[in-house]
Image 1 (tube, rainbow, N blue to C red):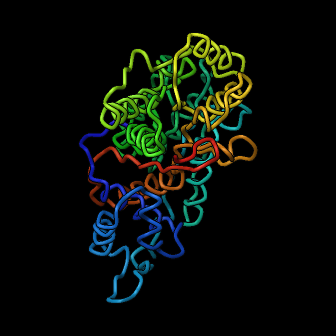
Image 2 (image 1 turned 180 degrees about the vertical axis):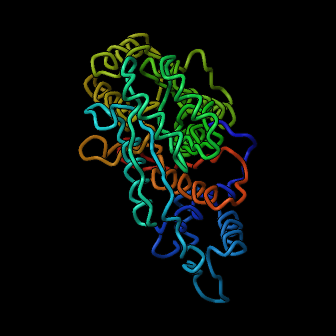
Length: 365
């Protein structure tokens, strides 16, 4: 997610914790050590974030005791607001993104816990003018709008105009950035950098980036992940050649496509000891393809994905950059609450830092 200005790491940690506390997602505050591991941050950075939380009344710090969450500050949820969530029509489809679905589910859960109900609306398909008028009226009369739509077409022009004009439209999970004044989503650039840092720490010297799908040219988070990884490798390794070490298939991630790409690489004699794959689905296929071609993962080639999908089987064993769906949902709802109370919201872009999900496709040498 692009930023208006670079936030310091302690500010990102503060934002993530403040949103979780406000949404009631934290029963107790994690220890400084636990927070350091979760956010890949040193103790001094964690303490700066905790001090900000204390100054703002989110936590209570007492000498010689573990800091505790202040519940009184959030005892008055906004209950009467008319909130809607505009989502793409395939939210419940079989091929939907589990990260996106998880954020939507968590957002609904947080709202219910705070005494608010969010009405779900689907983006009308082109040509469905009757439903389009219904959606437009709902958006026009809503107190607040959460939007998770990736793109809008010309027939949906009226909806686009409403979203742009509404003072409380929040784009969630890297939704279309030109609609709505506020955006909350994963900091994909820092996620790519974290992948480079992780491979460097693990002793890998010759990494590749592998991208798969037409989404790369249309979906800016993919580009940001690749840029973060490239810049991280250039900084840490000093010899990363983007033109030679970035492999892109302009098709959807399917096993035979990934297999053919890995086979061409190996047949060309190109040496690589690790691969950063821009999505978990393509990363799982990459692991299967490499093993089918006689490579040991992670001994010969380490693989690290992006998303942190918490599923069984190959996804569970995959090392990945995990998107923090709880924080994305919590920060989105916290901004909405502030707007409904006419409180000041600093900045229009809220990047949520990802974290490392350790699996068996990478070990540290």
